[in-house]
Length: 416
Ligand code: SAJ
Image (cartoon, rainbow, N blue to C red; front, top):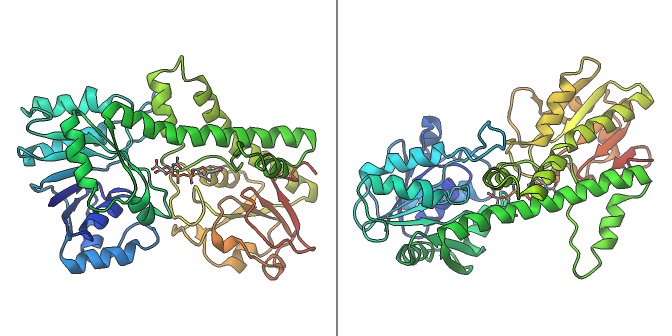
């Protein structure tokens, strides 16, 4: 089998490499020349555990190449971003998906399977992608087999989840579904669940929306408990002892390119109906302000000035700062003349990020933990001793050692 993948980001690259390491000849296409060059030189351009070794194996086997241009293949997979539009409801910007579809049309041949893995708004396959291919003269389900197979892997454990997660395959016709399912049988060990494209689109969006709504509930609980002098983290622990309760974990907000983006695709299509989904987005978006207010109060108590931000990524142990609430908080605090703000993040390589931990902590009045990187778990008093005022506001409840000499504050004891 020959595969051409369009988009070599967090999903397209691991997927391409996975196919290549299962005897499929893969051409990965991306518009970023630098990424293409790096990959052909055997170097990944994103951080993901195990991916570097997997790329080296794929290149050594001769099964993987990156390119700026597609080539004829048996199967085409589109894995390009779908950001939000700048409109009232932040609808799905389908321009990259439609551009990728146009780009592969000249290379399509009868019998090809075309799969969209990008997360898309409900009805995108029926109302946009299918008509585009029909305009080019193809009969869907006869000439070309068109499928939506949403990716559902968790950054940080993508390679494991690609193999072991269940996979939803939604074809435009039953034959399309069958052809799509055959493609994923190459390496998927989870269940391959067959459905139509519309159901696949909505299922994917609801998975991330479920999580966003539940995190909003945990974040709201934190605010409520803070008003009532109750430890929210203890409440969550207690309530989760119930066999049918699974409260999520509060934090500085919800980030990344999935949970903070996808619910809007539903809201934009049915704003009158999607009320809870919309409110949950607002609650999660209010968390950076809640954190900033807490920082202000803590620093005012001790006349503090220097803040050391621990973690800029949208979650722990990744290098991704897309839609990161930590970045929003950092930028808002940095813009305030009364504060001196230093960012420390061992996963982020940007010029303004301090990579010397001791320097970052020197003379600091507050460590503000915003991402749950493993590196932050066992920081000891030896480090915190460099601080002017040794206090930590840990919004992710990640720092495990709380020596006596440190004032340790998390979302459970913020009210004290
Ligand atoms: N977060 C909380 N509290 C929680 C869980 C998460 O505040 O209890 C925050 C995280 O810190 C982060 C955000 O939510 O800012 C999202 O993190 P995540 O780990 O929940 O998910 P993502 O965005 O990394 O990946 C999600 C996954 N979806 C689900 O678990 C339903 C993944 O399986 C999807 O493939 C991915 O979205 C995607 O690409 O859509």
